[in-house]
Length: 129
Image (cartoon, rainbow, N blue to C red; front, side, top):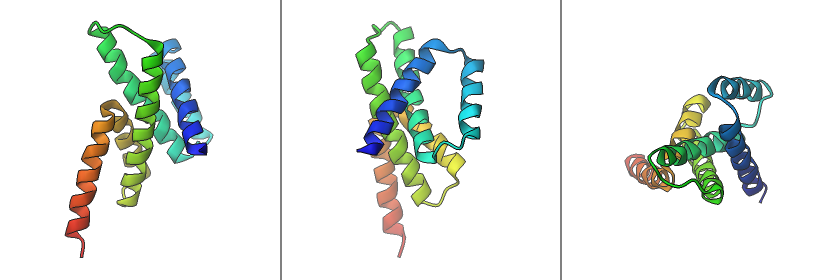
């Protein structure tokens, strides 16, 4: 339950951040958050949500109508994808920074990223004795 609330809060914050701040302000905010030692899973949720919103805004720039509820839904789904992929990468023994990047990219690609991760994990499990 707390993870779900955290993802919703992170997704909502990501929507506000992307709509209000410019690139330099966003970079400064991320640096500030990292200095405060935000838990890695929460950072993965934020990066996933930001990735999903970036994809949504890309579609908006291509001519799709902007609907705030759709943007929030995509941010929530993408934040969840970011956390799942982050945890999967950590379980595979990758560095947290690499796992955060993977979480952000998975947010951009949404549920398709979870399909790719599950196939990768299945293949990895078959190779191990």
